[in-house]
Amino acid sequence: MSRTRDRTVEALRRIELFAGLTDDELGWLADAGKPVTLADGEILFEDGQQAEYFYVLLTGELLISKLVGGWVEVVGRHSADAAEAVPSAATPGAEPEKPVAAHQFTGELPMLAGGGYVARGTAVGRTELLAYDQETFLEMIVRCPRVCRVLLPVLAWRIRSYELQAGRRALLDGLSVLAAGLAHELNNPTAALVRAARELGESVRALTGSAVRWGRLAADGEGARIDELAARIRARTGPRDPFEADRTMDALADELASHGVPGADELAAVLAEGGVEPGDLAGFACHVRECALPAAVGWLAHVLRAEALVADVAETSGRIAMLVRDTKSYSDLDRAPQRAVDLTEGLDATLAMYAARLDGVRVCRDYAPDLPPVTVYPSELNQVWANLVDNAIDAMGGEGVLSIRTRREDRYAVVEIRDDGPGIPAATIDMLFQPFFTTKDIGKGTGLGLHLSHGIVTTRHRGSISVTSVPGDTCFTVCLPAE
Image 1 (cartoon, rainbow, N blue to C red):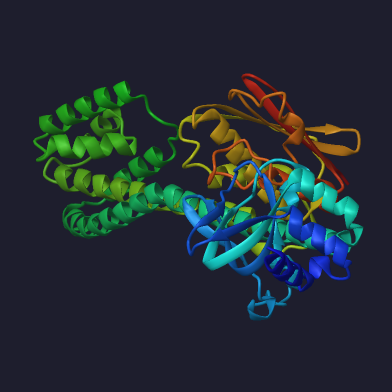
Image 2 (image 1 turned 180 degrees about the vertical axis):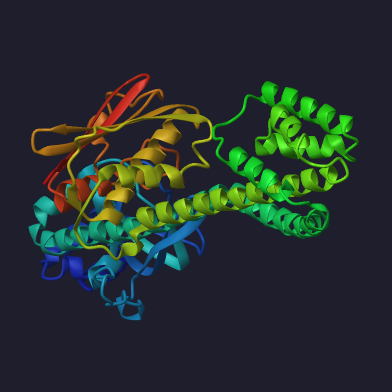
C-alpha cells in the first residue's frame, strides 16, 4: 500500500497545479483522492450532469466534447503528458494558447460555481485519475493555498475559451439562420421570376406576330385610336375587386363574341387583367373596321400581357434585391467598426432572416419615430437581436405573438423584445445572464447565448439588458446610449 501511495505522490509532484507543495501536502492529496480508472471510450461525466468531483489526470487522455444542435463538437483534449498535447494556434483572434496545467485537471468550474459539468468527458485509451468531492476540493484550497496560483489562471482561461468558442458558434449559427432564411425567402420570388421571364419570352414572340398582323390591317387613324386606348388603360391604378374582375371578364367576352372575334374568352381574361373595361372595347369597336378588330384586340391583349409580365419581373427582382439588402444589413460581413445606425434596420433584418421560423408567429412592431441613431458594432448587436428572437421563438414553441417595441428614454434608445410564452421560472430568472446557465435541454443550448449578449450590450456598448417575466409575458429590455 505504501509503495502505491509513494507512486501517487510522485505522480502528483509532476503536476503543475501541485508544484512547490510539501511532502505532507502531497501525501494528504494522495490519501484524500479517490482513484478512478477508465477504459478507452468510457465516459467520466456527461454534459449537464450534476458535478460531484474535481478530477486530476495522472495518466492517459480525456476528450472533452459537447452536443450542440445535434452535432458532437470537440471542445478540447486533456493529456497527462502535456508535452504531447497540441497547443492552440496563436493566430490573431484565436483563443489564448492553452496552459499546460489546463491539461492536468478538470471540473474546477462547477466545483466553485455549483451546477453541472458543461461538457462530456471521455477517456482516450486507459486513463487514471484522482477524484476529489466538493468538500475535499475546498479543503484542498484551504490546506494548500499555493494551488490557487495555478488554479485561478486556468479557470479564467477556460471561461474565456468557452466564451470565444461560443462566440464563433453563435456566428456560425447566425450564418446558418441567415442561409436558411435567405433560401426560404428567395424560393418564392425566384420561382416567380423564372416563371415570369419564361412567359415573357413567349409573350414577346406572340406580340411580334400580332404586331405584324395589326400593322398590315390598320388603316389611317385606327392605330392612333388603339394607342389612345392603351394609354388610358395604363393610367388606371389600384387593384380590382375579384368579383368585379369576373363580371368584367364575362362582359368583355360577350362584347368580343358579338363582333365575331375568335378566342373571345381567352382574350377577355387577358384584357380584364390588364384593366380594360367593357365600355373601352365598345367605344373602340365603333372606330375600327370589323375586319381589323380581331387583329387590333389581339395586339392590345399581347401588349398588356407583356407589360404585366415586365411589371412582375420588376417586382420580384425588387423583392430579391430587398432580401439581399436585409442579408447584408444582418450580417454586415463583420467589416463594420462602430458606426451610427438606425436600430430598427437591424431588428427588421433579423426578423427577415428568421422568417422561416416565424411562419406561425404574429410579429407586432411598434417603432418610435423619434428614435435617435446609436453608435454600435452592427454585426455584434445583430447577434443580440438574433439570440433574443431565437429564444422567444423557442419559448413560444413556434406559435404566439412576438412584439418588438422601440422608444426613446432620456439619452437612451430602448428596445423591448416580448413574447407570450409560458415565462421564465422566478427561481432562475436571476441566473439567466450567468455563463453556462441554460433552461434548454442538453444539446439545444450552450448556456452562453445570453451571457455573450449581456457582454456585448454592457461591455461593448456601455448599455444595459434586463428581463421581466410572468406566464404569458416575457420581456427583454436593451438600453443603449444614444447620440
